[in-house]
Amino acid sequence: MLDYNDKPADELKKKSLWLLDMDGTIYEENRIFDGTLALLSHIASSGGQYVFLTNNSSKSVEDYIKKVTAMGIKANRDSFFTSSQATVLYLKEHFPDALIYCQGTESLVKELRDSGIRVTTEMDLSADAVLVGFDTELTFRKLRNTCELLTKRDIPYIATNPDFVCPTDYGFVPDCGSMCIGIRYATGKMPLVIGKPEPTMIYIAEQKFAKTAADTVLIGDRVYTDIASGVNAGVTTIAVLSGEAKYEEIMTYEKQPTFVFRSVKEIFEGLTE
Image 1: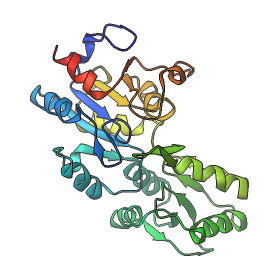
Image 2 (image 1 turned 45 degrees about the vertical axis):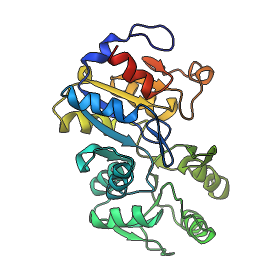
Image 3 (image 1 turned 90 degrees about the horizontal axis):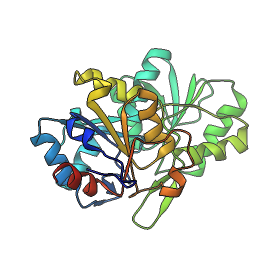
Image 4 (image 1 turned 135 degrees about the vertical axis):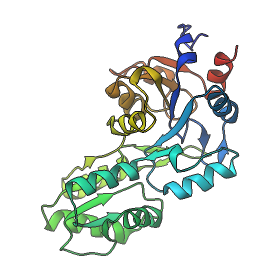
């Protein structure tokens, strides 16, 4: 089994915990990539476990289950760990009982509230912190509220993820990281970022399924989030060329993937050759 660089990758056949990014890795918006179902079926039939790690905070876990089930993917709540879930853990630890102003989708707000987080989506100068997510329902009023709070109050400012773009069926749209850059120009402030490239989600998945770093491999299409989080956690990483990152760009990063493959289909074909 050889990767894009003709590097031997037979060690992947021994992995039992597969952590997969979603957008740009296993699908593009609503189009599942060729090879995704075959790879996931192979992992499961070989006694392994797959978990989707996504920085996309626009959907709750329940919404993601519906999305991937419609694509033919077998999944339940244990199949996901999102930046939204990581943010909930962070807020509960550091801001118990705090009032959080959230610039995010209705799905994100519901997930926060269902987890016991006090949330407001209206201008409220008594808010204890500001949270910005990947908001596919963004309005000027939401942006104004965020900027007003950050300008008038010296309160903690948190973002669910640092991704600059999110892939679509025609290209890319601005993601949470790009929204935060716009807010920085308006307020001079940048957030504390949750989600990848932090290794937290990987550690929690390993603990949940009683796996070690040696058992684990992470697949993603972004070096600065997916691959960096895997490197930070000390696990094997695979960069795929089906999403944001291009090969020439990958080679410029300090934190390099262990392997590079064109797609999940190519990974499946290597595992079963």
